[in-house]
Structures are given as structure tokens and as C-alpha cells.
Image (cartoon, one colour):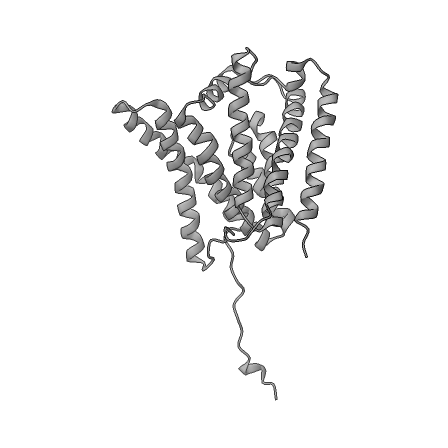
Length: 272
């Protein structure tokens, strides 16, 4: 009745990227940044504003990575599964605000405690990147959340979740997210926030909350760098130093805010 020779076999579905392909995608950042730097020199030679150049080169370099990833997906028959269409409860967006404030504050204090003082060259670079004018705000608060979330969550985390497991996808994409910041002072917080964003992406089945959370985080960073910079504080000063309270006290407060928000998010995003 059943003839094995007549049974139709189906090839295993291929998803992009796996772990090796994710590493190769990260390596492409170097030539993409070199091309962006070359483009920046051309724009500089025709007297384009430096902040506009930074925005243009940032979009060019990350846009190149996104385009390459989409081409690779198409070659293996894996459609970009960025999950834009899934409806997400408005409470996810509301609770994400205290969650990212608590997590961001927590890892910032821990980073200040365990890392040496930030080099002056890096401080100057961040001051320029956080200067509150339109091009820098568009770079940090609009372009970065969109492009970095598409790359780290919508492409890398998505591919690793399908190829390995949700845990591997979340952790490896968070590690890559930290790696592309190119310094430990931003990398520690980027890894912690990347884990949270990966979890949100996995549970919500949508990249939109991740972009929103990233937008809130970077927007607050730009505002705080500007506000406390005007008061004369260094960029690596933590909130306990500013308000003259103990670091342990602030760690407890931030941890409580994050955990409360996270538990409520877990209930809302609980799988059926």
C-alpha cells in the first residue's frame, strides 16, 4: 500500500543567517565603514556639515549591511521575517519605558563601578555624537534604532532563533550588538539591553517594540548627556554621584523598577 520509493521528500528549509554567517556579516562592518569613511571625505571636500556627514555615512554603512543580508536571504529562499505585521498590546510599549530606564540605569552604574575611567578621546567622540542638533538626533534617535534593530534582531536574532534556539539567538545577537559599539563602556550596557530586546522580539513576534525601546533608550541618553553635561558632569558619571546617594541604593531602585516592569511584560507576552 505504501511504497517508500514513491514517497516525496522535501528539502530542509534553510534560514539565514546561522552562527557562522552572522559572524561573517559582522566582519562586513569593516569594509562598509571604510567605504563610508571614503564617502565622508568626498562630502567633506565639498564643505558639507560634519554632523550631516556623520548621519549620511552611518546610514550608508548600516544600510549596506542590511542590503547584503537581504540579498543573502533571497539566495537561500529565506524571506526577510522582520515580523512587522504582528499586533502588539499597547501595554508592551507603556511598560517598556520603565523597563529600559531601570535596566539602563542599572547597567550604567555597574559599568562605572567595574570599568576604568572612560578615555578622553572616547568622551569627545560621544559628546559629538550626542550633541543635540537635528542631524545627530536623527542619527542616534532615529537611524540607529531602525538599522541596528533590523540587523541585530530582525536578521541575526531571527536567523539564530530558527537555526539554533531562542536562547542562542537572543544571547548571540546581544553579543554582536555589544561588539559593534566597539568599546566596553557602551558594550556592557549594549549587551544587557540587547538581551532584553531579543527577548521582547522573541515574545512579541514583532520588531516594532524593539525599535521603540531603542528609540526611548537613545533619546534619553541624548537628553541626559546634554542636560548633565551643561551642569559640568563627565559623560561617565553615574546618577549616584550626581545626587549624592549610595551606588547600592540606586542599584536596588533601578533593579526594582526593571524587575517589576519585566514581570508585568512577561504576563502580557506569555505564550498561549
